[in-house]
Each structure stands twice: as structure tokens, then as C-alpha cells.
Length: 414
Length: 113
View 1 (cartoon, rainbow over the protein chains, first blue to last red):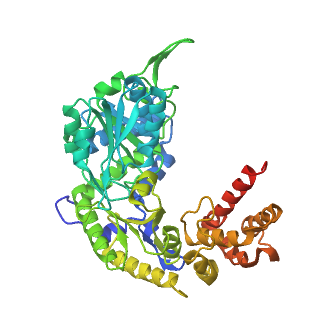
View 2: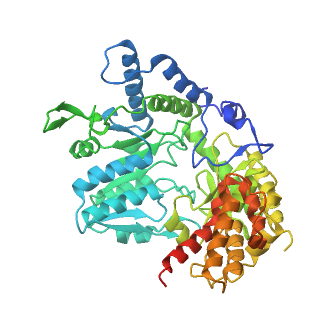
View 3: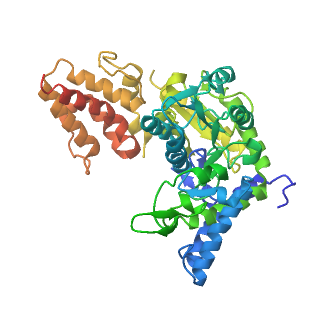
């Protein structure tokens, strides 16, 4: 499909076998894409093809299959560099996911660069995975954590507070490009420019943005960018850390083992060059290969078109949800990413999700790995509908009917 | 699976009007099953000897988590018997047992007292 034409979303939907089934006797409406996306046939085929034809270990064998596996694995690295416009493919480190990527940076860059009195600046809308690794490193280094506040239900960062928080003690600013709870899209480029001017190292959590909009590390101007494959049509278990070469070069290795060394003596070893220094042991090989296919798939549709479609779905959902009396919806009124979190009055999110499930609608209910933010918003949990390009306006209409039914069901006998 | 087995009227009633709310040390906010389970629990154990609470704890857990559904439910469970429907919703069993975890913790902490 030429990237210039308007995608036919209903045809694209046919690429996802899992969507065409009934759950509890009702057609499945999958609105839990912020947790994990579904996978198109092409990605499933890539996994199968690898294991049926090319499976071997990488970087060591001299035989044909090992060469194919190595080419597939390293080809995926080139493709990933190209996907995020990285300057060099050696700046791409494969990990298990966003969480492992952040832990890698915390344990290597963090241990080498943070000391007592330093400040790690985060935001109140971070996922636990961009909070807890820093808490662990803060304990070990004596550094302190600080948070950029979120302004109420609209869920924007408080930019005035941010300017005051950028003190000379801040060594790292780590923030999400798109919030998994609020749907806020942060101005990553502007934030990184401010940090860079003050010599603050930046890490961008792109878990929620990478499959939904064009992401260009050189344009953003960050120092590290992390994401997972499974939220962008790829398999689970594969993630990416991108870092500037000069930073990665100076960082000590994290895990030790095969592949990350150039020579090993009984008492000392020499580290391999980038990116292998950070990839100890046999890696997930099918993961990057299938992720390569997912990237091709997304680019064939066009990430700008996916983003525009996401925004249309979210804006429509937000507007229709507001029709439900007393429903409290979170996040910005416009310019949001493809999700809406809400609280249905008098019905706890877990009950909403159970009742919705029995009508074929898959939602997420809970704290969304954002417990501090939930406390700040003074809610114990929310229900969340998160969309991807294969979702439809009709599905949103059906969600509204289901939510009204749930409300009625819960008020019976009162 | 019938949702009405999960959301019985008495569950919704306890959820809307939790009994003894605020008298428990960790009065909180939860889903309907958690709230109803906690509310009924307080009615059963308030001003009762410790041994009653312990045996009620066991009966409730047998009802919700024993591999086989018990043929006869323990009479002393009373209204709590309505929660047997939760068995058919494995993802929600922990909602109903959560307040009982707090009870167990409280009993253990006060063992010496």
C-alpha cells in the first residue's frame, strides 16, 4: 500500500486473526491495547518462518542456519535504528522490554554517574517501571528523587513547576512520551531541549508512543529512549534501549556472560564492542526478527496516519463517555493519545471490567501501574479503554451501550 | 456463567451501605465484592471471641478456594454464603478474600495480646 493513500482500516482489521472471535458469546471488542497490542498475521508468520527454517544460535556458528539467524538478528537491529532514526545501529541494544531497558540504564549509567546529593527528576505520570528502578538506584547511590507534578484531571505536566525543579543538582530527567493512564502526550522535544541546555541527561519512555506515532530520536534530542515490541504489533519479550554512542561507550556492562566479551581470562575479561557489550548470553532471536516485520507493517500503514486515527477514536470515545451521567474522564480534552481512563460513578473499576468482559468487551481496570498518580487524583482505580488502528467507531458506540447497561445493572434494587 | 450469581442483591446492598464502616483499622475502598465481603465479615466477628473469627476464616476460605466446591456450606457463614458464586470467577476470588487477609494479619499481630 502506498504510504500516501488513506488506509482502509476495515481491510487492515482483517490482518488480525485474534479479533475475529466471540468472548462469552459476544463479538470481541479489544480495548486493552495500552497493555498489549494484537499481532497481525505477518508477524505471526515471521515467528513461524524463523523457527521452521532458520533457527540457530547467533554470532558464533559458521554454518548456514547460524548465518541466517545472525543476519535476521542484526538486520532487525539495522531496521530498528532506521525506525527511530538513530545515527548508528550499534546504539540499539535489544532487551526484554521497556522495564529491562530502564533497569539497564539505571544500573549502568546510574551507578557510574549518580552520587549523594544528585537528583533524579521524574514526573508524577510515570509508570512504575520508570519509578522503581530509580528508587533502587537512589538507595544505592544516595541520590534523591523529585517529581514534576501533574495538574488535576486534565493530566498535563506543570511546566512552571518544571522550570523550578531543573536545579543544578538534577543529573537525569526521565519521563514518558505518552501516559498510559491519562493519554497525555508530552512535548518530548521541548522537554529534552530544556534539559540539554542545563547539561541534564534525558531518558524518554516511548512504550506507549512508539507504535502510535512517528518517533525520531535525533529530532527529540534525548540521550536514551526505551520501548517494548509487544505494544506495537510485535511479540512479548523483546524490547529496545537506544542510547547515544558516547554515553553507551562509557557505561560499564550490566550482565556478564557470553557474547558481551572480546576475551576472557580466569581473572579478567575485556568487554566486547557496542552493542554486544550489553547483550550477554543467547538473546531472544525470533523476537527482533518478528519486530522487524512489525515495523515494516506499521510503516506500510504510516505512523502519522495511525496517530491521526488514534486521536479520532480517542476524541470520539471521550465525547461519548461524557454523555454518561456523572462519569469522570481523565486526561486532556484534545491532543490525547488513543486511550481514555474513566470512573463510572458508584461502580468500582474491577466490577466494570468483569461486567464488560461478559459482554465481550476487554477493558483494563485498576491502578495501571500508576499508584502514586491514582492517589494524587484521589481515585483508587479507573477503567481504561485503549485503542489501536484496528478498532472502530462502532466498537466505541457498543462500549457506551455496555457501560449504560452496567450502570443500570448495578443500580438495581437501590 | 451467570453474572447474577456473582452480583447478588445482598452483595450490592452491602457494597452500597457497608456495615461498621470506619470502625475497622484499614477502612478503605474497593470493588463491590471486596466491600460486601468486608461488610459481612464485620457483622460476623464484631464483639465475638477470637476463636469464632478463626473458624469463620477457615470456612470462608474452604468455600472460595477449596479445589472442589463444598457440597454443604457451613451454616455459620450465614449471609456470606452468597459469595460462593465468586468461585466461578477465578480472577475475582482475591477481591472477596482480601478483607480476610487483613483479618488474619490482625489476628496474628494480636496473638500475644
